[in-house]
Image 1 (cartoon, rainbow, N blue to C red):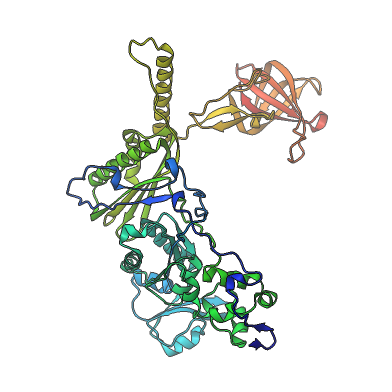
Image 2 (cartoon, rainbow, N blue to C red):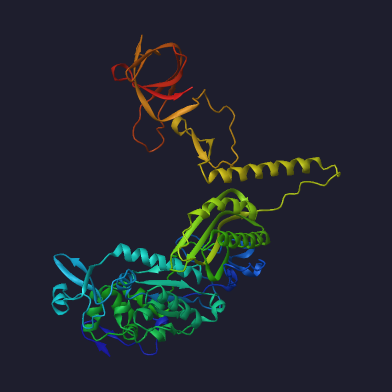
Length: 581
C-alpha cells in the first residue's frame, strides 16, 4: 500500500532494524562491569542494632571498589556487549499538579490553569469528568462554578518531582527525571533484591501512592519504551526482555516526544499507531518530518538506547538500612549512623580504598530526603574519625515523624594502603621514620578535617604568573606544596589586599618614589622607600589591556610599612596601596 502525497509503502519482509538508514540495536550493559548488592535490615528505635557485617551494605562498585564506568554526574554507566539487556522502570505522574494540591489540603473539584497569551486554558482537572486539557478556563467556570481554580506553579511541581526522585533512590542508584511528568530508574541487577521486577514495580507505585502521588509504572528494556507505555496508561506491565517493539506497536503517536504538528500530519495520512509508522520506509519519513521522528521511534522500540541522566551520581560504595519503626530521637540516629559507618569502612578496607567524601542520606516517612556531606583531606576509613565529623552535622537533621531509611554513600574514594611502621628491635630505622611521618601527616589531616567543619582551610602554592594577585593559588590544606628555587623573585607583603586602595601621593620627580602619602583624609610622611620593581602586563594571555606597574616598599614616619604601586606616568599616574609588609 502506498499513502498518497508521501510515497510511503510497506517493505515486504524487511525487519525495522535492517531497513536502510536504521539505527543499530541497543547494546546492553555487561554484567561484569558493575554489581549492585543490597540487603535491607529492619530496626526498631527501642531495640538493639544487629551486629554490623558486610551483608548489611549496599554497594555500587566496579572491580576493586572503583567507580563504575561512566559513573559521574549526568551520565549512566556505559553499555557493553552481553546477553542480558538493561532494564528500566518508568514511573509516569500524570496528575502531578493536582496531587500536589491534594497533598497541600485542597479538596473537591480542582482546575489547574495557565496563561497562553491573553487566553487562560486548563492544564489539568481533578474530579471533573468532561474537562479536557486545553479547554478555556471561562467555559469550565461556567460548567462547574464551585471548582477550585489554581494557577499552574511549574516550579513547585518540579521541586516535588525532584523530592520524589530522591525518595526513589532507595530502589536504584540511577534515578533520572524524564520530561516534566515522569521518573526513570535503571533497575538492572536490583530487581531480585525486592522479589522480582513485578514486586519492585508494585512497591515503587505503592510507595508513591502513600506519598500522595498517583503513578503509572512499567518495566521494559529501553527507557523510552517504558516511558511510552507508562504515559499510555499501561500500568503494572512488565515487558519481557526483547519485547519492546511488540509492546509499543499499538500505542498512539501522542506518547512520543515529538511536536504535536507531526502527530496531526501523520494522523491525517492514516498513521495513528507506532507500529503503522514503523512499517513505512524511513527515507521519506526523514525527508518529511526530520530525523527526530525516526529517533523517537527507534528509542520507543528499543532499537536505540538513549542513556539517562541520573539525578545523583552513583556512589562508589554504600551502606544503608531500613527501619520498621521510624527513628526520631538523636540517640537512635547516632546508633544507626555508627553502625553504618562501621559497615561502610569495612567495605572500604576490603576494597583497599579510603573515602574522601561521604554523604548521609536520610529518608523521612513523609517522602522528604535530607542530605549531609563531609569531606576529608586524605583518604580515610576510620569510623571513629568519620563519626566525629558527622557529630555536629547531625544536629541539622529534622526528623519530623521519623526516618525510615538512612544511607551512607562514599561518593569519592582513593586507593589507600596500610602503612607499616617497622618492627620493634629489628633495626629498621627507615621504616620507623617513614611510619612516624605518615602517622603525623594523618593526624594533621584529621585535625584539618575537624577544623574544616567550622572554618574554611587552605594553603597557598606558587603559580606560574607574575602579577601579585595571581602569583599564588589556593590548594587543599593537606596538599604538598613544592616551592621552586628563587621564588619569589622579590619580597612580597604579608597581607595582600583583595581590592587595592587608591592613594594620593607626592614625589619629588615623576619617576621618584613617593615622599608623602594621603590615605583618606590623613597624610603620612614617607621616611624610607625602596624600588621601583616594575611588572609588565601578561601580554600572552587573552585579558583586557593593562598598564605596567611600579611597586615600592615604603616605611612611614609612624613605622608602618606599606607596599604601594604606581600605574601610569606623569600626569596620568595613579597610586594604590596593594599590601602591608
